[in-house]
Amino acid sequence: KAGVTQTPRYLIKTRGQQVTLSCSPISGHRSVSWYQQTPGQGLQFLFEYFSETQRNKGNFPGRFSGRQFSNSRSEMNVSTLELGDSALYLCASSPGPLTGVVEQYFGPGTRLTVT
Amino acid sequence: DQQVKQNSPSLSVQEGRISILNCDYTNSMFDYFLWYKKYPAEGPTFLISISSIKDKNEDGRFTVFLNKSAKHLSLHIVPSQPGDSAVYFCAAVTGGYQKVTFGTGTKLQVIP
Image (cartoon, rainbow over all chains, first blue to last red; front, side, top):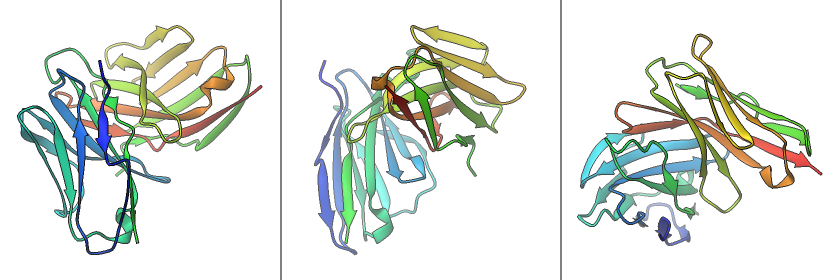
């Protein structure tokens, strides 16, 4: 099976702009989660989608949003970019609830730099 | 509110010896605990997990121990190999697996 893919891998944006990141989960996986990784902060949970519904959201401002499509692919959007949004954004997929599978499978991430 | 903490940002171990990575948590409602390994420029890779109803789980060179009374878990790697050099994250899951809380990571260096 192909792994989780994320596009683009690298992105440079200017303050005030908006950005959309894309994630394709492993085939058959219906749950997609997004995380932000910054030095010293570990992985901060952004949100999780299952069957096109956002089931949980982390403590991030409303500038961060996401969605999931019927084929389980997901996008996240960050509007009005700030310098502090510079980070590695990771997408992870899993089969979903009630499958007995707890672990998530991560993509390589999108490195976003805001200047 | 850091519910999952890894208090050691780095650890150095000689090849062949045991590596012990530690993690503390505050939320007694966590159902599962997991360890992930991350190399630079890659996403984290799942290593091993343990249910909150167990106190030990073993997979090859990796063993995770859970002490619920102390709200502490540890990952033992025996024997340590240079390829184990990476950042290790512990994570905890609750609420029907809707949300995963990660620690800040421990960078392990295995010296040949």
